[in-house]
Length: 138
Image (tube, rainbow, N blue to C red):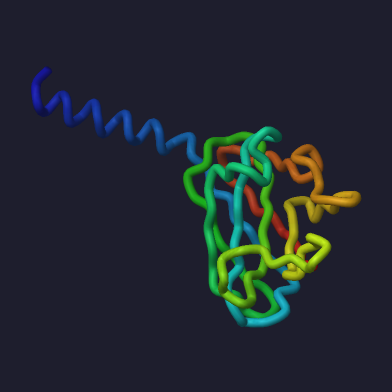
């Protein structure tokens, strides 16, 4: 294949891949302090939920509200789990009974019963145009 045609084909392919990509804006409310970071994980299946995130991101905490954007996700269903890592140790701290001791949240502000919510409870649809998820830490 001619080098110019090859370059044009690659450019068109990359454009086509990016054309279906959507951005998911995550607004995190009720951040208690500006200490540490907000860590966010995005999941694309029930099997991988809370085990294998598709994407992760973090943003510096700010008292009140923070916002971050997860870019280039294919349109589809996703679940979000996040927590305020106030002490900056990059892990969810738990009390001796295993209950999270740092503020956390899930998409749809879902709550579990005697444990985390299911993927079905946190699942949100991301259209090709993108979407915004508002969650409140607790």
